[in-house]
Amino acid sequence: MKIYDQHLHTEISPDSEAPLFDYCERALALGLAGFTVTDHCDVDGWDGKPYDMRRAEGYRDVLAAREKYPSLFIGFGAELGQEYLAPDFAREIYTEENLDFIIGSAHALGATYGGDIYAKDFYWIKHDSEAHCSEILDRYVETLISHCENSKFDVLGHLTYPLRYMRRDGFAATLSNHRDGVAAAFNALIRRGKGIEINSSGVKPPLGEPMPGLEWVKLFRDLGGEIITLGSDAHRVGDMAQNFDVAAEVAKAAGFTHYALYKNRVPEFVAL
Image (cartoon, rainbow, N blue to C red; front, side, top):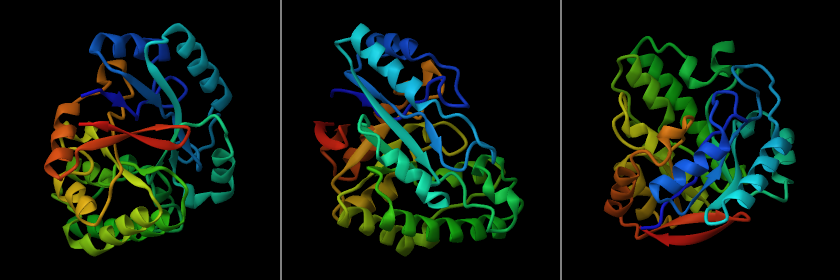
């Protein structure tokens, strides 16, 4: 299959130091057909603090890479995080005419829930009990439903993202008790012609499966979902297209025969 990695971060993101041209060389070495740069665009800043997202610089880098590596598709995208916390700011991102692809991610719940710690990425939360995990997931799923009903992103990013850090802290958390809520979020996506991402970074411990795993990808398909994308969420060049074989097998096991490549915010379908 032709491989397009549609979730990766360059040195434009605050948590990556990876040069874009190094990704291009890596893509050629791996035999990829292309990739899309989706640097962080968290509307609430980074670790609770504002940061310079360098969007114009990032686009100039992509234009330069396209000129130097004409055999590769190099898309310009954004991982738009926590749109629900600053919708006015998010609307500015949606006005960018040069965007190929927008991932809608939920990395945090916001300070209105349980104190300032919840304004931070789930990575920074210290989960101290099963009850604590359950409480967070209750709010997370509520947030997802609204996010999927009202936002204009192309695909929902890494559905099971909070579970990775709950597992890290020693709790066997799942979304199994939230099947109806997840289904409601999926139905909202499907009605609006949106999709979900299969994020292969979750295959590494402690999660051990893509985000989301087969259970949820199959539910999306069974409900009528047609659009999936594949992304490594690489922050280092060596992680580009990591575990894509596993992600592709999950997609096929769920009943998908194609995944989507976004160009100018429009999906084109590529055989798995």
